[in-house]
Structures are given as structure tokens and as C-alpha cells.
Image (cartoon, rainbow, N blue to C red; front, side):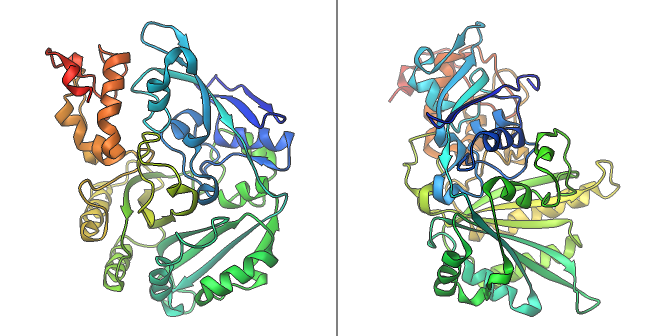
Length: 417
């Protein structure tokens, strides 16, 4: 699949055909070569592959303004289990619905997506303001929860928290970094921040104006590199050159200060820069679409998504089990503060701890354990689509959508309601 690299941009129609072996960096670079004001809304890691990222959702720094990548798929080419290559018309709307957030690997082999591009200003503004516990980080993080999903939708206030060595003391502290993109100029951004989040104390000197494509480098920790770096398939930043375990959650009610202090204890326990908790705000365009419009069900009502991450430079670390145990304990600790019935998770942060099956005949009951977390009420429709288009369960993985007819011999019409 990595050889399917073709990207074709139509600036007049504001569309792009991109084969799924291309990376996000290659897609962004190609768009920027054609226009200063066309862009695409997707993730921040340039070496992530287009196919898996977009078919699983595709959250990014412009999602509060333009939603996720999957919401901008307008056509696709897919090979089914019979070797036929289908487009949107020939595959039908049910299958086309399924691959826009339900993952592509359960239903066939997605070869290419046709994407609707978005329009961005020629100049955008970025900033990264970091505060430690000694600089009132706990209060700022707590206050952020009441602001981030309601502030101007042109502004993405993303939050990264980790344990660091205090610059002022020998002991460790917690650092909260407010890493942000504003789709506009700094003189428009500052009044918004002064009105909605004055506690952060943002000033003009904290902000940098640049083009959208330059912001891609900035958020990938590649701000001193040339744009050609985006064409590389090898991670260039230290951020990407690690082995890590991740889990995810969704938050619908603000976490109290006592809950945040518990997170700080976990981050201190794991050590400097190795454990990280990321809060990614929703609101804005994320709440425009209904939960059932695509399989991506995480819409209105979510304040933010949590990404838990523990990283190591080598996969054979002697303390691997203790690090994995750390993230599982943190996940357990967060139970009272996150979504329930089901406890939701983001498909693109694939988490095999939620359950898996390596057999060819994954049962509905087994798959529903993770399926309801990833897709909510859309899971049953995904099962019906799978049963229709791949009844033999030819396309499968540890957490694929099951085909009812591959294990259930009775009339499946009762699942059609």
C-alpha cells in the first residue's frame, strides 16, 4: 500500500484525489504547492498514512472550525473481496458511509479518497504557552475546561501535560502547554483571549504569524526545517521517533481540581517527559454533525478528548511491563471523570486493551466490547454493512467489524431494524 502515492489537486473544484499510501505530510505539501489558501483538516503528524487516519476519523488542529477529515470525503475507490474496484456510486451509500469513520480495513481495501479541501486565511497565528504548577498550572487547566469547547471556533486551544525538571528548582514539577492555532491574525486573536481566557496572560510576543503550511511544521516540532521535510516518510522529530502505548477517553463534564491533582501524581510517578496526558477540545464544527451522519459518533456534548501516552526510545526496555501497568492504572483512575455507558474511545488511538479476537469468526458479543466504545450506536449499522459486503469476513483484524453471517447461521433480517 505504501506505493500508492498519487495526489492530484483540483484548485478550481477545491478537491484532491489522494491514494492511501501517501502520508499526511505529502498531502499537505502537495496542496500548498498549488495554493496558499487551500488546506485540509487532519492530524499533526506528517508521517502518518492517509488511508488509516482519514478512514478512522482524522482529528486535527482545525477540527473546531472544519471538523474531522472523514467529514470531507466525497468519493473513494475501494477493492472488495471479489477483487472489484468500486467508487461511491457502485459501492452504494451504506458502504460509503462505513468507510468515513468506521475504518477502511473491515470492509475492503480503500485505494484512494476524493477529499473536499477547505479554505484558510493566508496568515494564521500560532502560540505555545507553558505554565508549571508554580505558575498556577492547575487553576489554568481547570479553567480551560470551561472555555476550550466554547471559544471562537477559529481557535484551537490544545493542552499537553507532562512531568519536567523545574527550571527554578531541582525538584520535578508539572508543565501544562497550551499549544494553539488561530485561523487569523494576531490582532484579532488577542481580544478573544483577553475576553475569554485572560488567566493565561497571552501577549503579542507569545504569538507567531505564519502560513498554514508553516503551521504544519510548527506543530510537528519541525519549525526550523524546510517544507521538503514533509515529503519524508521517516519521522524527523524526536516526538515521532519513539515507541509508545496510548489510550483515549472523552470528557463531558469538567474534571474537578482534585481529579487533576491525581493526574499530576501519576505523571510524577512515570518520570520526566515519558508520560503525557493530552486534552483536545471539541465544540464548534465538531458538534454540527449528528452522531449517525458518519460512524464517528463523538460529536455534541463532548468537551474534550483525552490522549494518554507513555513513551520509550527502545521497545525492549527492561521496565516495559511497569510502564504499561502505569498507563492502565491511570486509565482506571480516570473512570469517574470520563464518559460512561459506553466509556468512549477514539478509533485512531487503537487500544487492544479494550478487547480483541484473533479468530476468523469474531462474534458480535466480542466485537461489541470495543465496537460500542469506538462507534457508539453506529456499531450495529457497521455490523449490518459488514455482513452485506463481506459475509465471509475476509477482511479482518484484532478489532475489525464482525460479519454476522460468518458465525451466526440464522436469518440475519432481525438485525436490519
